[in-house]
Amino acid sequence: SWFLMIVCGILTPVGGLLFTIQWDNDIISASAYEELFNAIHSAQFLEFLLPGVIAAIFALDLMKLILNDAEKRLMYLTVPMAIAGLYGGIIYAYIINWEPDADPTYEFYQYSQVACISAGYFIFGIMCIVRILVAKEKISLGDDPAKAIMYEFILSLFIVIGGFICAVGYWAFIDGMFETDTICDSTGTACSTGYVRVYTLSYLYGDPYQPGFYAAETADVNYESQFKAFYCGYSFLIFLFVAAISFDMNLIGNYKKARDGQAAASDE
Image (cartoon, rainbow, N blue to C red; front, side, top):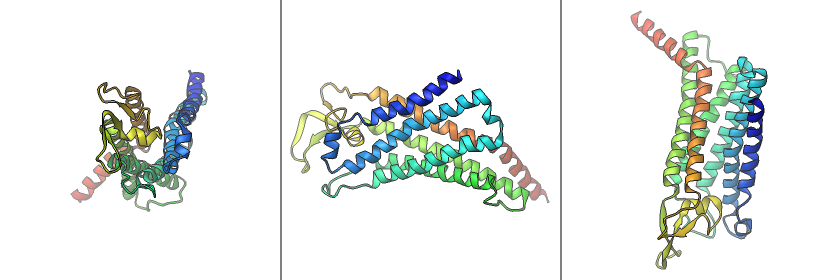
């Protein structure tokens, strides 16, 4: 079983790399959107690389039980999510705030949804870094044990909240990804009645014809089911993995201790 997980961990990012380079780069490099498309490809590669890394970690755990040790759990669980959180947050923040110089009418059609994804990445990424610094005693939670427990509970809570916000952003992104509109020119006066554009796909994948356009009468968007299945699964992976980190920080136990401590203080 560990061998199959290692194979999965290798093939997933390799497949992601092949996927992100298969679009028509001649069109991309000849357009004013090259920087945007490169950033989007970087984000897509992260979304394939992270599941592969997670699979490799659990494969190593099956072989050597590395996750039985608290110090190794910190290294193998928290560090990858800290890196992924900062990287994903920065990339998606760049994507939604990028504007082409030659197109004043440019609009990123899912700004709010992708901003939610970026915020979620940033929250759990930064909180994972704080957890590492606390565990390495680079940051002190104070000398009061009750307050230290409360701070650790809040930290673990923010990690899982960040993962949830990121997952919700992906769910909203999935919901709006395949919304369509009639193809019009920049003035909005000359519009096609035979075809419509899936704007998000056109911008995300740098392909002005497939899968971004489709015949209006067929209502059959290329790869719709595949995209929805992937992003749905990826969002659950993000949320469950950061939830595992929070539970490793004794989220429930610290909540009970903090609640009991406050109750005891109130009785006094």
